[in-house]
Amino acid sequence: MRLLIGLVTILGLLQTGFSADTPGKDLLEQATELFRGGKKPEAFAVVEKAITQDPKNAKAFFLEGSFYMENKQPGKAVDSFNKAIALDPKPAAVYQTRGEANFQLGRFKDSVHDFTKVLQIEPEKAPYHWQRGISCYYAKQYEEGRKQFELHKSVNPNDVENGVWHYLCVSKMSGVQKAKSALISIAGDSRIPMKEIYELFAGRAKPEDVLQAAKDGPPSPQLNGQIFYADLYLGLWHEAQGNGKEARIHILKAAVEAPDDYMGIVARVHANLLDKTRP
Image (cartoon, rainbow, N blue to C red):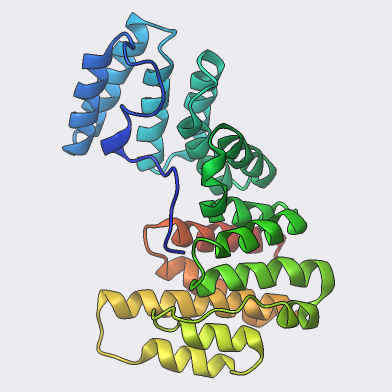
């Protein structure tokens, strides 16, 4: 997926809907600069100082949680976000980042709840929120996922991944033949090997066509990304067809190849699910 909404970065943490006159603002700005500079222990220490000075500083807890997210500690992040929301439930950014953390933890219904809350606060973002659709899929809320991906098409009509996740939701409700016939029409996604992935889900290509397209070209970071996407979507396709062994092979490979972005997180989360259900 290419469009992200509400994904809070360290650069934007101090403009998130909290009160402009938040106590301890200087400390939070200092902590942000430290974290951006790679001085993470010092950044956490400054945030804790801000919290000690003002235990009702929702923004400080939000910043702490965001640091934990960047530090790949989603469990601790959720704890901090819970405290921020208890103090100030208004900013959508806290629900967005808590939704991402809950997804990483495999708490899919909680993730859907958080992302839905984001859209209640900022309804104009509804068409863009494909992350919510993916959480709906894993939460087994397939009809909600189907509707989310159809809505996303209105703002991102050339995204093969959106069509694939729509297919996956429909296949869970009505089977793969219905999903194939309802496949969202996509044209113009130039990313390799998205054309072949789309043709695979449409029933007009074979798995080896996807792999061949992904592997064309000299070794490079871009080539690594192509192979990751091939393995991720081959795994999801095989799973939809009921080919559990082949699905596991590709998903586990994708989890190893995963880039440090949201789809990489999806691959790792899916691999964790396979490990939990392994006989």
